Image 1 (cartoon, rainbow, N blue to C red):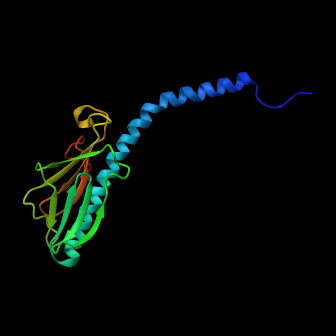
Image 2: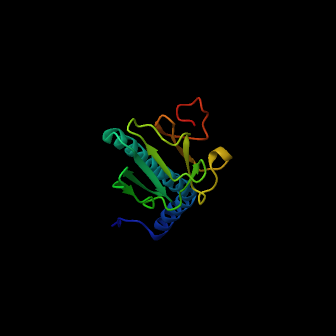
Image 3: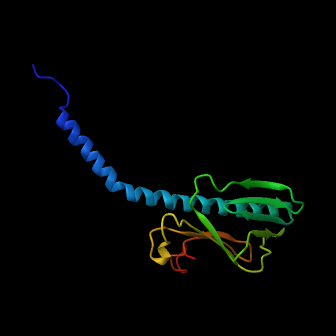
Length: 167
């Protein structure tokens, strides 16, 4: 009578094949995780800035988006907090740099226009994962821009400015 099941040798070969596949896929998985952290933080910034602009139009008054590290707060002219988010949720390695340097707040007036007087750029990168693709690295860094007219958009600095997704 023939017994059903796997022999020890068959199980060991199966485990070895799975182990090799995991080792081969691990670098891609790490890059994917690092890029996801950049995307998550960029989405959070975009949402906060769009909320601030929408609230300024809705209230027909000044509303300010304030960045503190990777966390942000949206407040009205009286200083009342409308909404705030902690940027550490799933984005522990992602970092933000602003242009003009040192910019931590963007205000919108009742028409939804930025009162900054120039384009404000928030570049989101992940130094833990490496350099940005625009500089020859593997990270897909993103930028969130606030135009003088108040338009808020996310773009990829690696792509040409003629590309709809480019900066």
